[in-house]
Length: 276
Length: 265
Image (cartoon, rainbow over all chains, first blue to last red; front, top):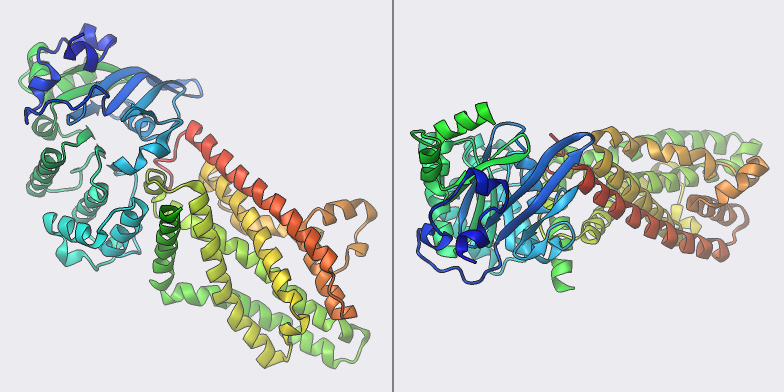
């Protein structure tokens, strides 16, 4: 079994996409994958709400150290898929594994090694940034917490708001603080839902740079949901596109553009949103 | 165990930060019990001075009000501290962290106790200074009464928190209303004997009934009913276990239903 067969989607995807590179080749750092246990494995994942299938038979695997984009229009099933990967939603069928653990039943074994950021979730607005980061650092059992907070605050240039109440920060500052919270425990697996949605283009690019640097330094795995195709092209080794709860395409950004005869991922997204 | 305590301490610190972030919040904790105590305190003074048959029961009334408030505020403190997580859209952050349900429950209990002490102590002082009613006349039994009522308030708080997680904001009003159901049944202001016979088993299945009967025994007869308090403690242990199991079951059910991520939206 080669890397492609082992790591990439098994079912509908193979018929839609035929990636030409192996994960090892695609890994920009050239690092070999330390073992075969994927960071994230989504197997036959389904979620039914009443009569509606929010997620319908989704399969994909994210090797360790990869950054994978999960794309799709509104209601495509991305958030439900991410929620199942986080273990916040139990699948109706199939399973979501993180670092070899089923998130429906064994999530407590792996929660300290992962973290997330989502626009659906906020940090308590009445607490200062320092208080919030201290609370979450302690929840995650971060060693040398004070130093860790100082490092992140310096890295994300949040020193001037450290002792300000989180609820009174600008939307962009809140987003940066949320990203800092997501990195507080040096996670092996990071789930990011629209991480730069409320940032201006300059600051968004800057945050992407920080995320890239973190990924490179830590060898972390990132699953990223975004509507910003430029961001996805810049950050992601691989892209999974969903529509109506199903995966309709996956591959490397450039590959997808070539396969669908589009100029870029933006056009691919629009094309698939209309035909899928 | 150490990391578990650390997480409980982290959550308690988080709630403490909220509490101290606003003096209005602190004031609110004292305000309602104090206002209520003023009303009942003046009634107590009126009855006490009236030299009527009611005069002997005036102390009972005030004692009942004080203890009922412990139960009511204990539950409110637990539930409102939990609701902070929903209102601030922070629940998913907590659910995604290594925090275990029993650690969350323990921190909520601790915070409920802190809020109770903040709210109750000034009121007790006020009652003594303004109306000359010394709650310590109940003797060491007071501690057992307090403990039993607090345990009951936590058991109820756990169920309400679970229902809010499962049902969302629709269940939020339970935080205020659920205790009112208990008021007529757990014989706060009258003995169990005042209820119709068919309601007696219901009353004795409720732990506050034991406390209020115990209080009346102390204030009227000067006897501490240890038997009642032991039964009450045993029943509370059962209710607390049921409360926590219900909380975990409803949390699990919410994971099936979905919506934990977007709760508070």
